[in-house]
Image (cartoon, rainbow, N blue to C red):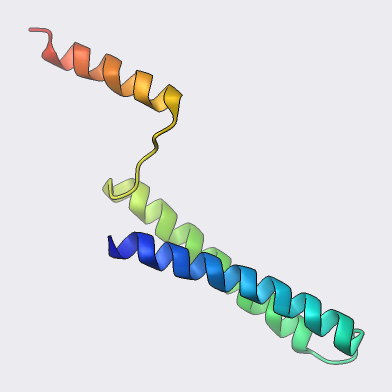
Length: 83
């Protein structure tokens, strides 16, 4: 459960950083380093987010409910039940 909360917080941080970079770009017109700092924060958050997502799939804490995965899971369950 904590993993999903961390992923959501990182994603919200990414969106906030995206819009703050846009705001700094429009306000400063490229004369300060705030846009670059926002980009570096966004890059660090993106790397952390991808790391947590990979960790979640690797440990099995995150899964997919896509229809093509459900079919695959059902066929695996049928194969495992057959003696």
